[in-house]
Length: 461
Ligand SMILES: Cc1cc2nc3c(=O)[nH]c(=O)nc-3n(C[C@H](O)[C@H](O)[C@H](O)COP(=O)(O)OP(=O)(O)OC[C@H]3O[C@@H](n4cnc5c(N)ncnc54)[C@H](O)[C@@H]3O)c2cc1C
Image (cartoon, rainbow, N blue to C red):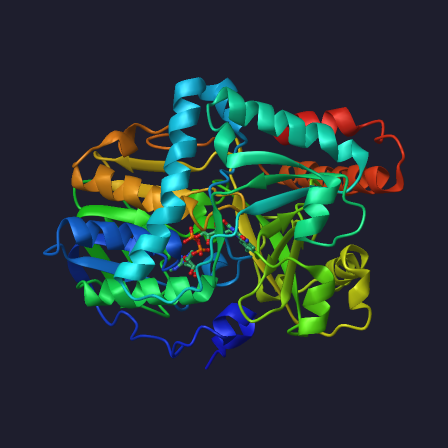
């Protein structure tokens, strides 16, 4: 039997029994069937059942609830959207961009509200985000981000901090300034996902674990196919498998799985925390392309996450990729670079998982009433709160009870497919390499590499 606690510190400390629920034993008929018991699938189930408690909702999960990114992430429950406000404004206009950003704010609070209502102790702590400029070259990025927020009329929740102000909050080396964003919480990801699974069962939903969906069919009688039978749905089939959807032949190029890896320190002593500060437990980030994200856990550890593990040909996803020695070593080195006072600290956990990148970087939430197929995916590593939003949107689209949510730019849209291999592999490996080189040059105070403009252009398209 698989030991699911080994997949992340979060699953290990979820406080929940990880023994798999019963698998699907034979074909069944329901109203809505959902592939995937991560946040997307579970939030969708949750809001469907809240809207109509009589609905027959089944969730079909290959492993256990929270096995995927939802049980492994960095714990940022953030109003940050996968696409920057400036890009949203360019693509959809000011009003649509503003509406989406406000909906993201609401999502952070909505996660807290449901945790309260359903007695899910997810260690929710609203401490904001501090994005650190570690080098003068990062300051323009922070200023242009603030300008975009101001244009959208959201200036009150973002504030540029001087190096001194930032240092007062947290003692990290080489800080030249920071951007503080108030609408962000940190939480215990697995307590949230496991708690949500229990809430859904309480509201009448059924979760089948250790049941792999091998295919799906849309039409008047849509269904999920599994080795032990099919689940036929009267109203909708929901595909909520994020990166893992690429394993289904029909969705192989829908998103790109890119690994994000995490390392965790032992709990720090009171004396170490006194040196570091960080008393408000803000989520911390760098301005690097390799996306460094840090969380101070409720039990006093530092979680440091970053990208950089190589993309594998054919969008491969495997347990073996959860750990990548060179990348984990680089992240541990970063912990000591950021916090030299921690020399000698022990690292107790290392894990990782795939995030789903859509071809246009924009998450999608879609329900096709003719095919009766719904999906939400492509969170680019920013899904803890975004999945709450997309879950509510999907529940609206499926139930037909529309509000302003279904008008958001994230609703009823589809991202293009990724290129075929080996072009996909060549392009992604080039980008990963270029971003590492750009970050490294900035760190060394050297000019950007000659191809930086090309990489930055491709990264936006
Ligand atoms: C290391 C890491 C750090 C991250 N940090 C953050 C963060 O700090 N903040 C943030 O906002 N976001 C973060 N993210 C992203 C966030 O975790 C995801 O966007 C979010 O969890 C996606 O939820 P999901 O339900 O769509 O997908 P998942 O949680 O991946 O769930 C999909 C589920 O579907 C199941 N499944 C897939 N295919 C099948 C099939 N064929 N049959 C049956 N079941 C199937 C899988 O087993 C899985 O349980 C991070 C992700 C990773 C990997």
